[in-house]
Image (cartoon, rainbow, N blue to C red; front, top):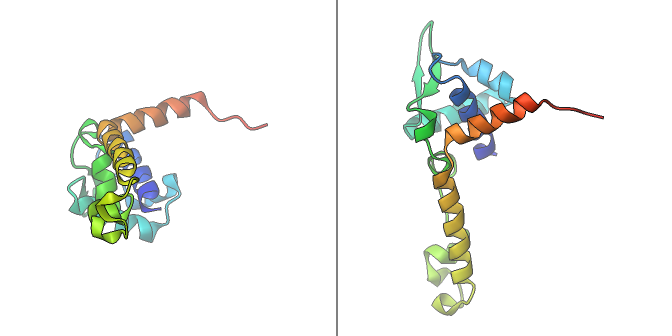
Length: 141
């Protein structure tokens, strides 16, 4: 849930990048994120150096760098950390089979693919996809 809501907020900030600070209440309303939870997420993202916050009359939140420089890897790491898919990948002693487990290679490869994708997709990519999908419109029958 943290990553989902956090990415929603980050895409909102990316779409408004260069237009000044965005109010927390505007982000929450536009992205359907509970306000208290959004405040916590923005604090985590600020501590990770991905978001800047300003107080005062023209205060709010903005990206700390251009959206094209923010990798999804960084956002996920800031909000959830990047644990191994299985505990035994980080420490083979966590598994009763230890280093002789035939599945470890499989899960390491899957983890590497996930990490590679998170590093290759930027916030700018997600914001562009959102823009493209919004232009198509939504039709219900």
